[in-house]
Image 1 (cartoon, one colour):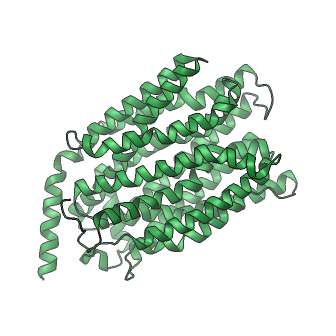
Image 2 (tube, rainbow, N blue to C red):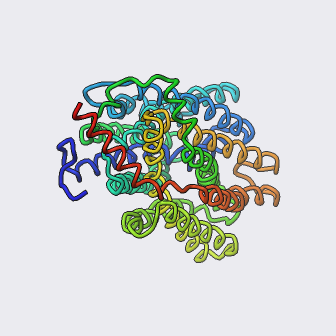
Image 3 (cartoon, one colour):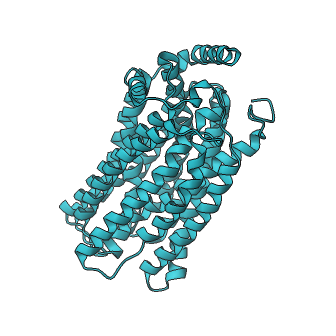
Length: 454
């Protein structure tokens, strides 16, 4: 986009920054969930790995259905602030409250603690849905330019990694500083601080983005039309199936990071370092995405970035306990992940346009929410798999691990993610929307001009 202002009159950089910090807000809380929640439940709250696995499976599947409900709500929302934008502000407050509650250990029995974990984690997941689904669904309404969508998606991922890096490097030092000898107190106070900051950032994001309006956005889309649009959207089908493997591999690996370095490598001191690498190095991949996407198709960028990520994980496998090589592999994988995630979020908007072009229905809310649902299913399945593998192979919280448990941890952190990423590349080999997208955009723009002139 060459103009310094958007079609709504807001400064283009102001909108890019406003959109980007929305995901920074999410990551202040959700990165702690992906990195430390399972460890918190097993090693601090004292729940068994199997119980936590079931908790993750049940909670995330239930939450996935609420993602779809949130998408339906967005498609039926019509305010002077738009469809998606109001929810960034509305959802910020419950998001912060449940973030603190989820990392609080009540003086209950083991069964009581498990019930409390279900209630607070479900509440946090619902609140996350209220703010995260709108971040995805609003993108097609911010601009009609394919390149500017990549720029906005890049801003989103850039800020998400900034938030994730802050969490990865600051969480454990904050936990130790604020909690003293009590990690439980430290986690609670740390999450309370992150929650307050998230409210301020979501409010800032709400004030600095604007949705475009056209005739399709002015009506509440009937549910039957919205689902019919998804049913005939071939490229979204490919994209959606891939979510299971792309995000599943990510969730499995991040959840196993603290276990791998604590028990397999006996280097708990490197947990914050590698977590920092996994969230800081991707910034460089994200920054080069707009440049690379000018010379390659989005699918091509996805394939190259996935290959880089896999190469980094393979390097860690062969590194064994040679720490410099482990850190090098983590850096290579992180760069590939940053490049891939940025192009992924840019790609996510294109099947929405394809569906509107083919059926006349722009069901952005429903499509993004179903994507979110699939992501939650991936998170649920991988969380359950990780928990059951640990329990089945004799994992001992804060103890000396048998060889079987160490192998299970290695599988969660490296071996299974490598396989899942290879499957992801195989699925995306069938994604050819890039070839016809210019014509789709041209046709949609012509329709918009006709609607405006009527």
